[in-house]
Length: 85
Figure (spheres, rainbow, N blue to C red):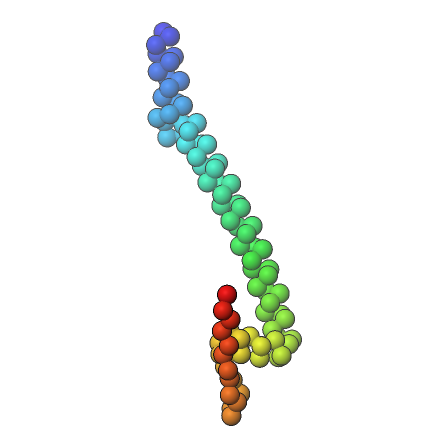
């Protein structure tokens, strides 16, 4: 009798489709996914605020175009200065 009870307990704890181990693993995955979702929501909000700032500020667009993409105005000479660190 005790052997049967022990077998059933071990079966449900480790080997069953809905075992305790599986439930713990799924809860951990759920927690990770919820955290990632919150991170993505925060990043989305930051990007939306940057988009609004760019829509309303042409000087900022020009600054980004010059600094990040190396763009220049016609007939303008650009000198790139590299710092020795």
